Length: 102
Image 1: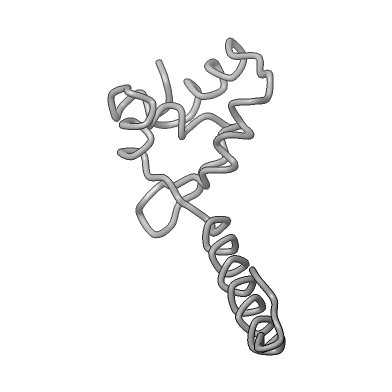
Image 2: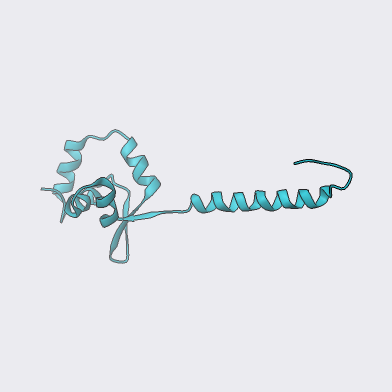
């Protein structure tokens, strides 16, 4: 930005404020909650929907029911994957539940 005698500083400041507000709004939208269904999870993970459903049924997996649809929040899934778990115990717990892994 070049300044000279004819530059309206107040106008430029208001334009900058407007740009900053738009940037903040865009950042806020990008942080919005993104819920992933079993079908979407299967596509992301490149597995069959039944495998994705078994993962959604694990006790430690951050899924929940919204109406009749099971969903998980994207950031919670990422966090879940980053944590170390005892997979054998988890699969046994899941197989004791209805509809779990066998």
